[in-house]
Length: 195
Ligand SMILES: [Zn+2]
Image (spheres, rainbow, N blue to C red):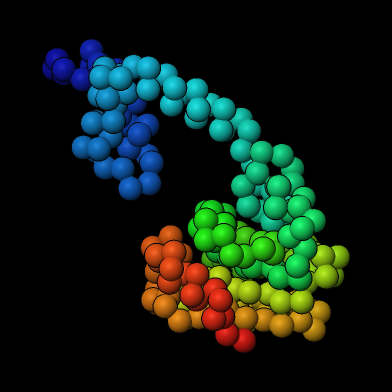
């Protein structure tokens, strides 16, 4: 049977590709594909180029697992951020949120494998704590029972006698850092509590 879609393979390939993106449904994918392929071809080509560029150049920093365009990210290379504080976050995107706040001047460590604690690189974490003279590890994880357990597990695996703290009040339980407004997160960071 003839299908209208058969003659629109390129269009539907784009719709299908866009649909794979997190939080994009069929309708949004169709709207986006229409914009990119018909309404604003220039934007479409621009995005195609930006995607290609990003996939070729963006990688994870070998020290903190945050995003970087070289082996080691700018924060890990910046000696002025050696202030004895190491912030542990769940996701590389959380670095953007904390950096936007503009108050934290230490370095980061992303727990890449939160759901798979066995794969957290504790050798690297312990090596960094010692070589970067870390005195305080701050957990900026959203409050939840699972994250409480993660904090205890990580604390247990850190051999140096350092201070552990976690972000405090103003952060509702069970949601990600990206859902918290900046003022609340800023308060939570400055009034962090000892673990
Ligand atoms: Zn880094």
